[in-house]
Length: 79
Image 1 (tube, rainbow, N blue to C red):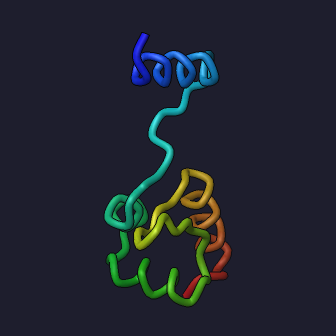
Image 2 (image 1 turned 60 degrees about the vertical axis):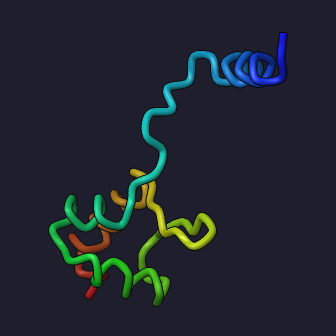
């Protein structure tokens, strides 16, 4: 068994029964789903006023981040 096969087996075993789905959303995906411009998303990530993740130089969001943004907007906490 080669290194790639070993890695594949270990990953499969440790994630058995877990539905990972798509873990992160892009700025474009979040902007589209929220109905706002990309610049609105980027401005708020720069100000750190919306939840987000930095993966190196990339800004990404989880479904929980998206829900938190939508909830904050619904009660008027985002401008």
